[in-house]
Picture (tube, rainbow, N blue to C red):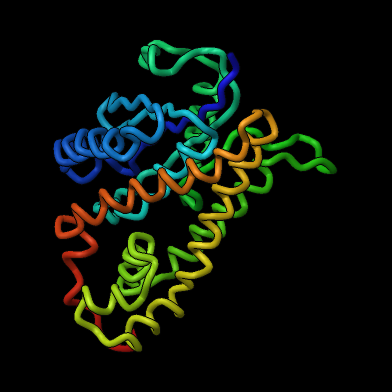
Length: 264
């Protein structure tokens, strides 16, 4: 039976250039466990940390790889050694629960690898996520032709954020409420509102949800139970937020909470 899946291949920029490759390797092993915990009981997924600085993810549904990649990027701790992701999605006949993804050589793996390599070859590293499937025809747009500019816009907005704005957006992605963030950081609501507005947090979150929606629509066009897809997107987001709430005191961004100053 045909089923839809998504794939990412993740690498780390400059992973061997700062004499901390052991830390990077250990950190990626931690992420392998974290990703599995996020997906547990929500979607079927296979995750493998391999080749020192690479993670391969294969999960049910077109939206899963992007969702996981988004949250990894948001809470990644090495600011000068950022992760980047080649992504693909599509229909397969295999049951991924039974796959050995170390040897699985499906075209979707090759497509994700090709997008990862495109990012790697860009010295400026202007983008950190890229979907396979862009059209070669200038008069006909594919879904990837829509998704990739969305993601590029997200990255531009995030790169323009201050450290304080980045912290507020990260916490907003967990709690979705400014009053809770103000209480957690022991700051006034007006201070949080300033960081939220100047950091374009609302627009960033809308973009993220819109990309998920587009991926859900792409899958929904090929399945009968398309009404389940928005519920699954919600359930995966919710499961990730629950896990992040539990581990919040350990998150690197949250450890910088005392640095927030009013109006900056």
